[in-house]
Length: 376
Length: 263
Ligand code: HEM
Ligand code: SF4
Image (cartoon, rainbow over all chains, first blue to last red; front, top):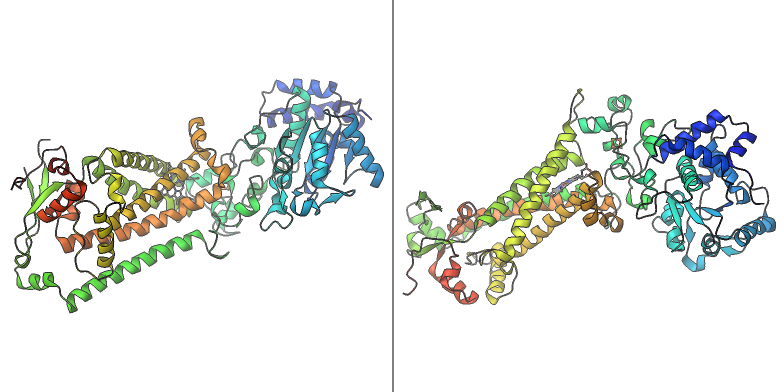
């Protein structure tokens, strides 16, 4: 079962030209923010390196990350990198099932210990001993501990595998968590996003095959090449933001002219991702280019923290779901202004009806002198 | 200091009797500077912040840089605010008797009496505000809240600044915060506290005018000149409570002593 083929071999077998293969290597170098010369290094490595064994585990997920990888108009080399590597075990695309499938997984874990790669998709439930996701009678937590524990490295793809994603969003009935919380201490690369971008995932693997190490990671184990910059700083609508040209309603003049989507709730200013440069569907487009604000799908707990998706800021907790921070703020200001005005009126009224000795004196005495300023 | 500009003591009217009012140098220069620095910064930050949250003006023409400019002004004013706040915090520990942190808390019995009296004053149960040289204690407590709000604005502002400006030093100090409290909640707090400061501003100006009108003690002028005009009785009491020497009360600076202390 150990794969003797290299990625280049697979490409050849699939009828992919050397020209397209080199294009792919160039894209990978660019995605990894490497100088152009590394295209050759990558091409050489992908021509020589035997493909490591890889397994793909799905837990509490929608298979969206698998879909993101498979649903391209024609098989791209990214797909081939991912697909052919995941040869040994992938619940959605493998032919085997039942006992045989589980046996294949067990064989990898036993025979390739410390050498194989794992891709994990989906959250892991922890409530009630993890009964909310079981495969072949074992809980997701149990499988993840064993399979990821013995791997050379684990790649958590998608929001759910990173921090629980949609499954973990409030009220999180299954006690779902992301992989690095469920199985702490494993060597992990997080590739959040809803779904992951297969180009980034391929780039992580290519980096691993080329240099033998994982790419540089941030404190949350996300590769810096993909999560090191704000969307807002890479966005093609940014000039409109800085100028002060904003879409005010869907389909208005500004929307037709491609102005900034800030007022429509775009979360680009708080989202780190390389979406604007890598894009989707063979680099055709990405949400903001298509005219919809970013929802920050690659940032932490985005279902809870980045919603409402069509408003700039979240609503303060404890005031009911519809009440915005602005409404609370203006109410407080109006309340204080009203109370102040009422107090002033109260003062005048009191002094009129119940004059104190001061007021009596003031009436009788000539007008008091105003303080003057003198210089010494 | 060559010339000290100070208002002449206002005269109280005849019915209360000719009280002897003494000018006391209460607000030292750092207090006044930081006060006006904070006022200017918060005013600018409030307007630019409101625009940054909800750009209420649209500039369709070419070659505009409106949001860019507004953001730049906001960031400049933000650093001015941080500077002013730091001066004030330093002066909590290095300033004169009335600038120190102890003035803001109901620590002494007199301060607690002040608290009660001021509450009664604002609820119309008492005609006169409590006679105190520095802050009255109710105001002191309010200022603690306000300094806390401003400090929160500065910290959340720096966190937001760290997301646009990748300075490693800044990230070291505040970069961990968004990993604990999500950046959207930081933004929400940064936005919401704007209104609390605005509400405070309304109340603050009103109560300063109110007390100045009732007391006629040059309260409003004091934050420009530094001097307040205080009657003998209050001075005596404050000296006793704080167990201060008269020299301390009047700070190290040269001031106009119109009172014979050895009387
Ligand atoms: C009284 C003090 C302040 C007020 C009222 C204020 C108000 C605001 C408001 C309303 C926003 C827009 C938030 C949003 O909707 O996204 C904002 C953003 C921001 N503020 Fe402040 N702010 C204050 C102090 C500061 C300070 C001290 C700094 C530090 C430099 C600062 C830096 C920023 C930054 C960097 C942003 C985000 C800009 C962006 O992402 O476009 N602010 N502020
Ligand atoms: S569309 Fe979104 S990401 Fe792009 S400039 Fe506007 S706010 Fe920033």
